[in-house]
Length: 287
Length: 287
Image 1 (cartoon, rainbow over the protein chains, first blue to last red):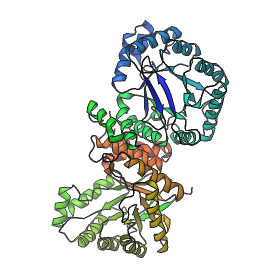
Image 2 (image 1 turned 60 degrees about the horizontal axis):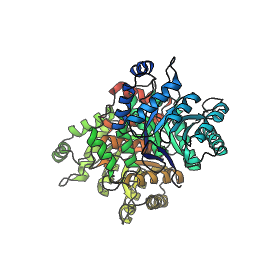
Image 3 (image 1 turned 60 degrees about the vertical axis):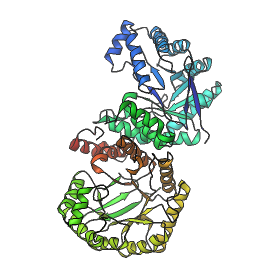
Image 4 (image 1 turned 120 degrees about the vertical axis):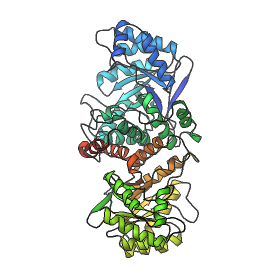
């Protein structure tokens, strides 16, 4: 399988999500869900705290930053534009524009200085027909979620078919496979003990058929269960073994496991990245 | 792929190493390498400490106990017999007879009350021709290491071929595939960054071709590197994703990750085993 590279860029730097390389880490913290201080900052239009979250995640090893400004009652289009500009002035890494609202995505793409990653399109007609033209117009890359009008399919084969639909439709807009990153979604194993297995199987199917880059949001999997970090870390290592090339994750807590798994996948010659992270942070100690 | 069950037994209990079930944990601590107190106990012929190590590992979740009494200068055959008898009187789980010496293995098999696991045979003629007849004679199961006269092969395909040789030879002695557990060996990634990748590929090849049970000794992989637990845990999760069904491991430190990975593989309906372990031990915290 040839390696697949999804190239993203900031003002002056480009990075590749690389199906044969180390995992690309997308910092998840600029997202108001469950973050009261960020909600308050976004309501006030105060950007200092957002910029602080950006800088800290870059210091902790983020390769890309997810930007989600979805707070009820604010002007999300304006907030997205303002936050993208502020973050892009403060840190020089690519951004991931995260919104269910296509106008916010358009504003984020307009404000991004380089090639951004759109989070996300899915297999619903209303999403495909609106998001993919924007992705094409701005020559962006896009995360494709394996869900459609019927929700998140229960089987790996059905999720694979949703991914195929997204890939085929993107192709019809002239968006090449290398600009697509499929997220096979993971639900919580606390509600359904086959939830992670189905996701891991979907990754394996997509990797075998398309070699396409694969993203995961890796913390839902443990929702409702005790000792969540041990589950999240095991899941990320297993997903990397199955073929994941990208994750939206808490870079503060997950980097040690990610560096270890890349070393074990043979994607960190001489263990340089693993040892560098250890020297910067000390032992992981399950934090 | 049908599931493969390697049945082991103690005086009154049997367990299956099951290619479709949760990982079978073989407690590694009755092994004098690096354990001064055990060396002293074995030299003195004092069995209390050995029995204590056995009981503690069973309490921590071991399904099987590895028994290695290799201390220079002692009568290993007598020590193996004595330790097997003492441990089998104290705990009611199957044993894994671990020695490079066939006379010790024979003594261990003779002393074992149930069906033991022999650790190990390898692809060398001198090993195959001596160990396999003992395995057949005692109707035991055996771990086959993928090394031969040329050492440990560098590629996954070459390790697979050594496993094939062991499986074929065992067949010629009338030992069925379900009584064989292949250990594809893992060297340290500190010395060679492809070391773990080759092992993971070997697991995948063996799982696809034979569906045979796979064992790993999962702590060598991190030798010489800092923050070893994070590497060992990631490796075990990745190996379980690739198809490992059994590991010789430190059950005190690794059980949380193993229970999490089994939950994620869909092999712990309702998370019963994961939650039971959490309730017994509290959070993992990278210990």
